[in-house]
Structures are given as C-alpha cells and as structure tokens.
Length: 68
Image 1 (cartoon, rainbow, N blue to C red):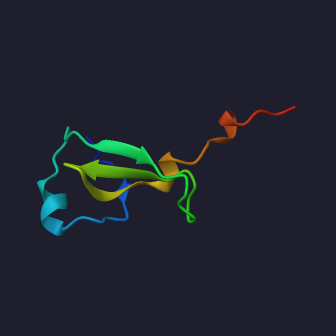
Image 2 (cartoon, rainbow, N blue to C red; image 1 turned 180 degrees about the vertical axis):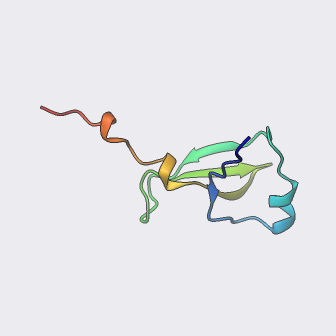
C-alpha cells in the first residue's frame, strides 16, 4: 500500500505531527484570504493549525471550468 501525504506547510510542533495517525479526525477550513493560494485549505487537529492541504488537491481541475 502506498502512503500519500497531502499535508504541507506544517505549523505544528514535531510532537503534534508525529502524534497524528491514519484516521485521525481533523477539521478543514477554507482560507480564501490567503494571498499565496486563494483555494487554500487549513488543517486543524484538536483546534490547532497543523498545516495545509497540498495545492495539488485544492486547485480546480480543468474539468471543473465551464467552456462555451
């Protein structure tokens, strides 16, 4: 089984990151005011910001846009 990491830009301590396990319940919040990425999604664990969902998973795909 291949492990895929989608959490980037870690904001938490190494101890917090290491305590995360597969299936951990996290809260996701959009961050539209993020100047680097208006599609940014923050990841919270126990109320603390631990990082962001990888840009590859937050950008709209070409299929999502409508064409005339």
